[in-house]
Length: 311
Image (tube, rainbow, N blue to C red):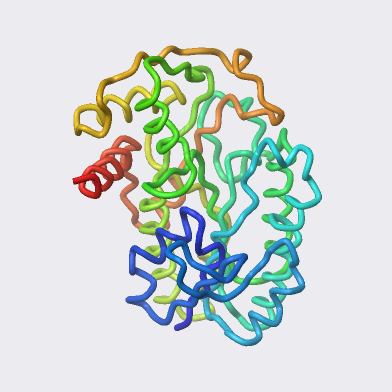
């Protein structure tokens, strides 16, 4: 079994490589935009901004499973770079899907809560109407649609508020600012579910195992779209409060800063954020027998890891 991991230098791709779960299941081939891994090691080149360039890579490697952890994720910048976002998040999926459909390869793809407009008041199910309110959200929905139309075997996992111990994410930004400032002003009227890359990887491995355990005729019953986040919900302010308090308790911060709640209107951004982006994960849990942990568990795990590395 050969796994091709695209986006190997992003926070999700890096977690797939360090976790080791894929390597225990077969051969893992990593690819990044510049052909380098986070530690400087060589990787294959996969530039999703040039979708047609992916075909020679796929033909040379012939993966059984394509894990697409690559994406254009600069939400605000996408408002002025919509064409680039569309190529990476949309057009590239059409190319991956077409190749996978011809060769019977499974495509594991990650999407986002931004495909919804955020107007709901209860968790979004997989069949809820999509209505992205940003260029980023529209590009991600285009990728979902392209993969479905391709006819390729696929999993589409929508996730939200993703963080890890590496890369650029809210948790790491809060730790940096919390060490530098005495007060942080954090948006308190957007609700969602912080989700660690470790959870996403563990859940994905379970879904891949379920796929591999079935014969070809029954795999079609599993493919489709699933929501994959941690359990529970909070605001960005609540997320910051919890992680900074726990970080201070573990000695990752010299002191706990004041954390002041503000409204979205007090922190204007080019792209509109969903006010409510909690995703219902029941379908994933039932289908794959996965016990979805509370969002606080992932935060604690990442802070413990950072604390151990700081010693």
